[in-house]
Length: 255
Picture 1 (cartoon, helix red, strand yellow):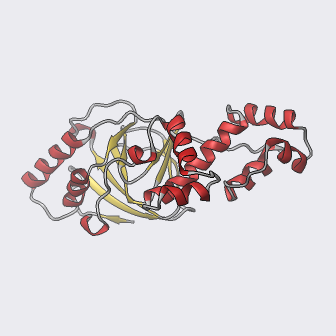
Picture 2: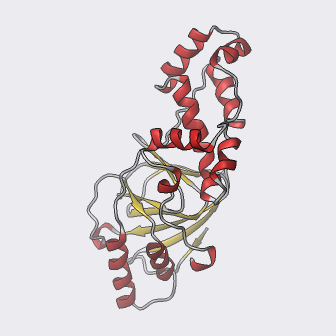
Picture 3: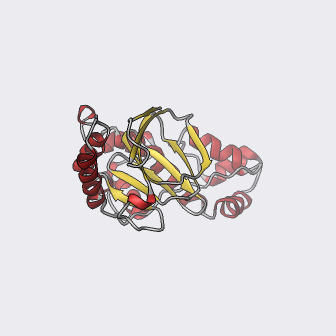
């Protein structure tokens, strides 16, 4: 973890290198937080919602919001902590915003040595650049029952596994109907939709890294890019290209 040396009376920028195993367990902050990953994909959960954030999206977390943060593989999280009295942003709920190249540059600029007037101007610009995005989250509730747990674990390890629910039932010693009921009861989703979300979420890190949709689609179990894109649109309301819509900054452009 590295911290820019700003006064505690101004916004603080903190950088966290993360791996798939990194989890910042449930906690709160006295300040507002803008969580953003210049590289990799963040996974942020509150008590009621969950978000998967590629480099083109950031999440505003109002002060006092209880949350947990992890990553989908290797990532770098750069968080902006803003004292409530200093912030012109008055959102009371977590809000996804567009992480445009300009917003990324402003965050990098705020990491540097600045005079108080320079820092104040940059903080004001940052607030102006926070444009809310309508989003559908890709939350994947993970079941842990004696029937569903082994199936979910196997699919998490290999999302492309093509076995049907009936075949999975024979693997765990249950009828297809029993296993279907267990998945719905434990996740709130029918098995087919749960597996679709699992596959799409597994694809996000590769998409964020710029891998071709065709290669990513095959990797997570879709025979064609068009089938993958159609599933992505059904779950999120947008295509993969639109989801990652703003071109992320080059690694060297973020200080």
